[in-house]
Image (cartoon, rainbow, N blue to C red; front, side, top):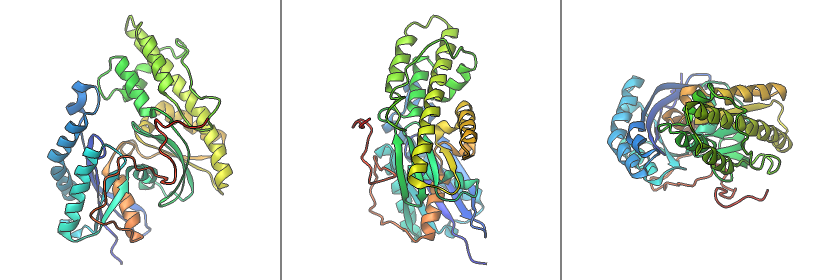
Length: 357
């Protein structure tokens, strides 16, 4: 029986300090031996959002503890680890640098390979942690910092079909929650508030709804929520705004995902149609339900990572490290942090730069 690679994955791109040990079985299916995530919610709550310097300091204080805990919970000895994979981007550079430096130091001290990982690639491959998923597939990545449709054709082979031209979807949820007076992180609470509201109370705009293919825009929607939130008189108004906001998001994502299906099929012509949804916003049950219905309507097999793997975690980073280890794709210890590292490196960085619609 050949020894299967054992990979330590480290994630510190924003406000979670995370580490995980991942290997695979004889059939090549990934196995998570441990997955530790330390949240910084309490650190940033009073500021209503992530403060980069405080996040980096918290990473420095926690990363050694989190990595040790991941190794201990895996039941392995440190000498059994074959490689270290660390997130190198995209993200907050002061935060990335903490995990990246720790990973390099660990690899150097243990004389094992170091692997840099694109955080987005971690999300893109995360469904492989709980399913036997084959390439190619269409990916919708929706999180606090990213919203894009990608054709995933293999390790390192991605084609972007659409992206947000301003705010990410998770950012729109968080900012709406803040306008409604919900404590950070408020995005996940919108779904709870919406259950008690009237989704037809407010007619909110759907930017670039009928143009731009499967590109997305949420800034105008956020501005409209700002305007109506100034007239909040009671709790029911908050519930109604949340419900109207979520209904608008569902309408936008239904239309844009349908456009993405068309674009994907035109570019890829797949034998079997898989649609994967990853990132923190993939935990929203209403969005999940709508996308599942849309997949059924269009003969796509839908795949979601487990809820605990939707947000930032070390297991998805270790998984990419595992795949790259098998391909002997290692990196030098001077590999830099890349705060704006696109998954499809041939594409322009669109946020704030404008997109021809």
